[in-house]
Image (cartoon, rainbow, N blue to C red; front, side):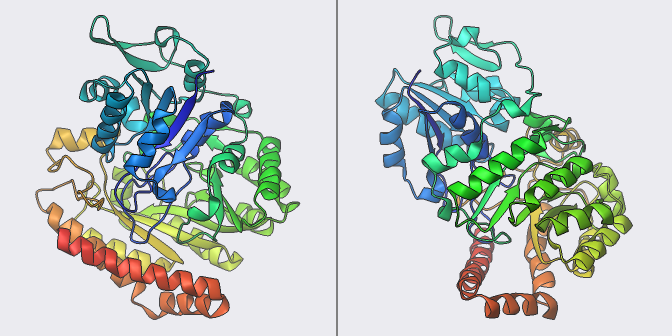
Length: 474
């Protein structure tokens, strides 16, 4: 077994875009997601090491020192962090030329040759799912014998694309990721504004039935078939996690859409009820009242829901598969049952106008969910949105983020410029949060919990500082 390191490298302050995060930019408040996609193969290789540099505050020097102690380093990269990650690899290889270094992640999966040519020091990149790919390499398999990778043939100075690796269908083959968390991570370093702290996130399945044109993971790695672990497997991991991490206040299922398979979601919920844990998950705004009721009675606390836009035509343009009126009914049902909602919205999707941006802001205020996130449309390579942007000449910027990690507005339309879309994000947040209802909710939470009070004060400071930095950078 090759001495193996799984690494989410140092990046800009507040970078939470390691494997597991869908938003690879600074957030309005500092947040860190678990590096689940790296932790999963780390759990397959018991003697491996997992380093998640950003939440642990590990800088370049320490990360290089740690990497130099290993023979194989697997780096999770992304479109926003690629240049930074390339510099890290070049420095590592200059220090230890004999080390083998590979990239994993969506960017490398869809642009394997371009990624290798951008970084000749790399040895390989893994395409799509890479759990067993990396295990085979760590076990000593030659790159030429390993499916699912592209690699440098140093003798011929050419890039070789090996055969595809079939997607894993029996998800119960994967070991419990919480074992890797216990071995390598400090759970108190991970926090998300709308989740209880400390929390743990993990996957119960991969892939998503939906065909949203902007969504990165199903179009690049996970696919459009929802491949799931058995309810028994999920239950056993949660039971173990509860024993390993007794201080955890909430578990989050980070599947693209946990509620895509409703009978299974209900079955898992019934099993979790016996553990008495609070849990949350990603959901689409189409879950019927009956399923919501079952999940709520079995410990569901919050749903993370992508509403994206309040304009039905824009939702149709991106193939969201949701009707605005159905989403309204869904929110009313959640409120009846006491289920909290963190709603996400996107500005600058195809079809956006000044009028539709105002309409979406009004829609968000009408829904009055508990918390929101507002993002700019991000055309990641490998997505249909990226192909549309290139074909229509909408793509006016090449970088998804600026040097400070702040998300850029990349799409520019004939009647709506990217600068105007960029400025609308702050307007959106202010129009939603500067109202009596959300202010009273926040004050009530602070009054009921001293720890929550301190947390909300910190987040408020970070929120206003973020937008001050954002205005200065624009």
